[in-house]
Amino acid sequence: MEAVYTVKGMTCGHCVNSVSTEISKIDGVTGVQVDLPTGAVTVSSAGPLPRTAIAAAVDEAGYELIGAQS
Image (cartoon, rainbow, N blue to C red; front, top):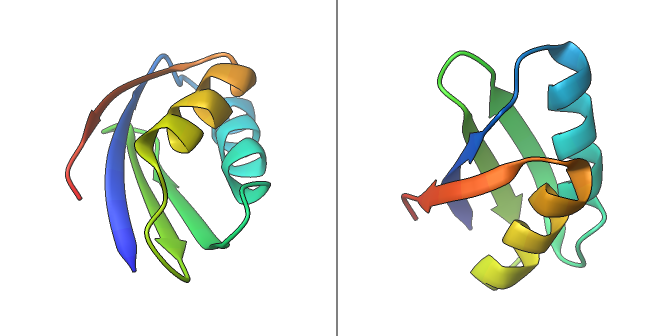
């Protein structure tokens, strides 16, 4: 499965790494791709993931989840 989320506040490569690392810790996540200019975060997973888990991981990284495009 693949879902696309929008994250607010990322401005550099370190931001991308922080968000990717935190989302990768969620059980079932198989891949994370971040597009810094747009804030789009594509999450690949073995099955559906709760939006709350993605939001919590983004928050832990210090950013804000502002949308999902599933």
